[in-house]
Length: 214
Ligand code: DLZ
Image 1 (cartoon, rainbow, N blue to C red):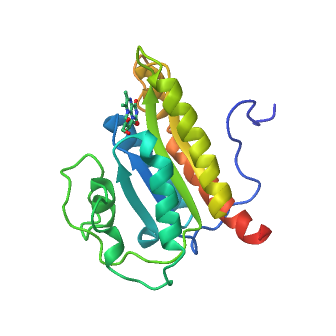
Image 2 (tube, rainbow, N blue to C red):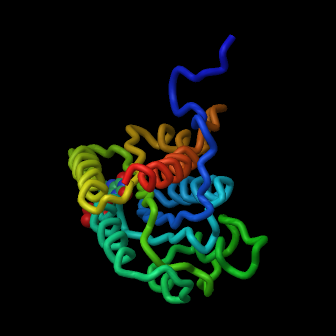
């Protein structure tokens, strides 16, 4: 029997090489446990694809609604930078996770005490792709529907306007359990699958392909 999947993302036809790519992750801070797991899975998979630690830039925003604006501004800003190593990029609102992942303590892992240090080896230059990560969980009002709609359309617009692939890393879950399962944190005997890993694969693939297509 074939091991092809009927649902979800099958393995890519080739392994795309991320070693020359510069990837932006922008993540919301709402629903932090889920977000940290998604970002962590995403970063680990990016590295597996060859993306260098110094070429993974992580920025945060309060909620998912802020993702399109931040993604657009960060992409536009990167397009005016030259490709040299510089220390300034990870300052300011850089998340604890990237501080951990880029600190000198290479044994540090997400979930341990946050470090306050920032990387001194972050690269600059245009982003090859962006991954916008958020987690919206339905409440009792229409808020969820409006934000889902705005963020989805906003992120699509950003990638078409900037010409840089923007991966839709936003969970739109009806329940807490749905969100946990999609971050690989499922309860009730189903750990689920970390979608952050899929978003990393999609980013590396799109970055590689769009470089060829242009
Ligand atoms: C206000 C709000 C609510 C109710 N729920 C979520 C959520 O589940 N996930 C998320 O990422 N953000 C949520 N927010 C915050 C909005 O995205 C946004 O930050 C605020 O409306 C301010 O613009």
